[in-house]
Image: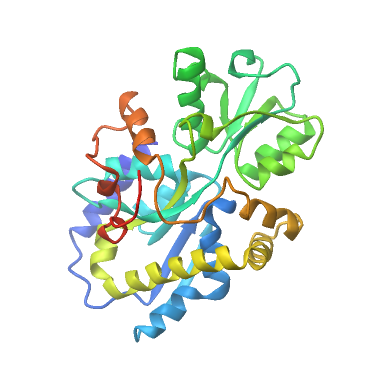
Length: 332
């Protein structure tokens, strides 16, 4: 991951040195997102053309392009290589970008997208806690070392086993759909899957699957799962377009709160999901979920990643990670 970031930065910065300041704001905004309910605002914004709507109100003709990607590393690479303007990504993936791009691209969060628990599920009845995993087990998660699930697993391993990387050797990178298929079929070496909604609840409908732990256990309470982010350069060069994106996010949040059933229908449609709309709606309205912009326990997660050497620069406060538009929020 670090090699990829450094390489992409080198290529991109070399290109930027040859380019002068933009004369006009962009007329297309390219969004990249991971999969799942952690990015529901992007689904709503895409389906209802909310960025286009708010750009038009500002006198701009703007179109959007939406790119769903299964891995946080692919999301980060899309932003670093200039193939995406705004990303929806899991919190650790964003924190890595923030740390690695200080003083150059300055990737910064626009707002939190979602808080939701991520479950570590298993098909082995004898696994009741992290102490029960053996060398014969494999834990699927979106990306070892950098995904939300990978960091939560390390935080829990430190709490439970006294060593944060005690289970790293058992992790394998798989997208949520692929990991779910592997766990449910039992035809691979995968015996556990650290995933997210809706996949974790789909798994738990199978009586042979049970939950080992929740990501909320790692931070002793709810934590931000995903954020929307962009570069300081994009925000500076496209002030009005950026405001349209902000307004679209705010409208999507309001829509999800007021119309969870329709929001669930949009998710099923855009994601081409086979899951029932009512099943998705129950997750959206679950008290453990929130689609509000204020970050939660972000500094606790950053502090852990900094302590274990995954991140170098320690911000003074959560506001350092977010653009000033979010500083009024009651975050942590």
